[in-house]
Image 1 (cartoon, rainbow, N blue to C red):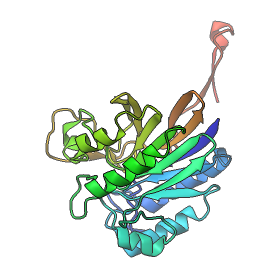
Image 2: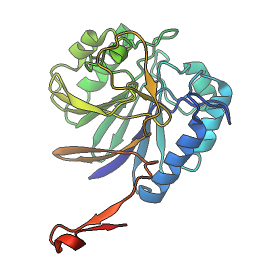
Image 3: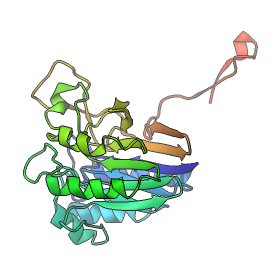
Length: 274
């Protein structure tokens, strides 16, 4: 099996600046340290958008410095808070398609990763225009003999959470028409929602994670106000095999008490603090 990692929605700011009272760089640095300690054997770490909060050049510089100690290669995808030009000024190695969208392909032992650009400049909703759809259609047609994994920022469908759904990819039906008929698409990984969400869409399994700084509160009544929280941050540990995809979400700053539990021991000895 191939082991990869997903980090999403870092919302980096210049050093020592905070949002919601939390320091995005410190929280990302803690994620990197935890990954290096426990998952240095992963083949790749994919960061699925909203890399910086205000698309500030100093924030992208802080992002590069924080990721410099990561034990494995990483791939960056833009989100609605990012600016393509400013991002590429700090990370010129990010590949572009022929139209300047930050889209690329990476072949790995598990199959083919396709990294998508769903940014619509100036708004927080996502878009996947005709030029991007044409690029993806060409790549998918050339990849019919491979297992495909798609990585993007915006979900192209409703996740039944209204205050988040208002910012989804608005032309998701057109995106869906492109992926239709490609039964070799194994999984869709996205960010943006700042929540652990999983399911399937058009027969394609999907998953999303909490961000590394702040989260979206689970409120099914609110339809307009974006309600954020400081629920525990997380990153994803993903295992890809010939006939399986497994996604673990790890709350890496969880300091709650841990216990050893042995159900076969005498009742008074089954539970012991770790």
